[in-house]
Image 1: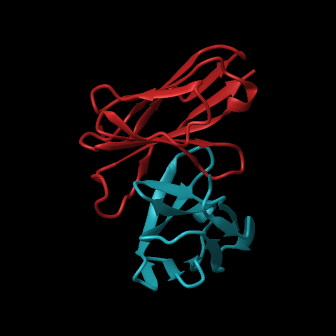
Image 2: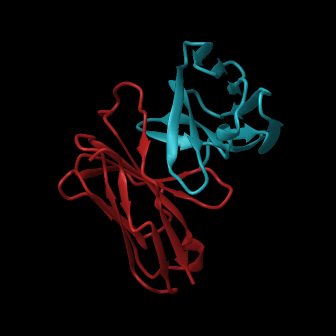
Length: 117
Length: 109
C-alpha cells in the first residue's frame, strides 16, 4: 500500500477484555515496529519484527501483550485481559532497513487509540 | 524506555520567528533523527544526521549534533502556523529507534 495502515483507528473496550490491533505496513518493508504512546509522552518501543520473526520484544510490558507477523507483512498486536493502564495510542511503523544495515528511517501509521474503561 | 529528553517541553512563538528545540541523549549513537507529529496523527520523519556530521540543513530546518555533549538541536526558521506540532528526536539502539519526550510547538498567526 501507499502508507502504513492501522485498524481500528479507535477501540473502546472494558477492563478484562481481549483486544487485537492490526498493522498493514508498506509493501516490501521488511522491518515492522510497534510503539505505544501515552498522552504527552514520546513513543515507547514495544516490539520489532524483521520478516516473520520478532527480532526484539524487550519493550513488551508483560505477558498480556503479544504480537505476530505470520507472513512477514501484516502484523497483529494482541492484548489479553486489558487494564485501564493499557489505554494509549498504539503506533505501528515499517522500514526497508535490513538487520544492522544503514540508517533506519521509519514510516508510521496514524495509530490505534485504545481506551480501556 | 526513552533515551532522549527534549527541551523545552513546550514552546509558543509568533509566525515568522525561529523555533529552537534541543535534545539530549544518554548513549553513543550512529545517527539521530527528528520526527514531527501533528495532533492525533502518526509521526513523520523530518531529517537524519549521522554521528560524524555536525550540521545539516533541509529547507527551513537546521539540525546540529554535538556527540561530545550528547545533544542535538532542531532549528525551524521563519516559522508558520502549519509548523504547529510536536517534535521528537530519536536515536538508534541496535535495530530500533528510541524516542525522546518531545517538544510541543505552537505557532500563532
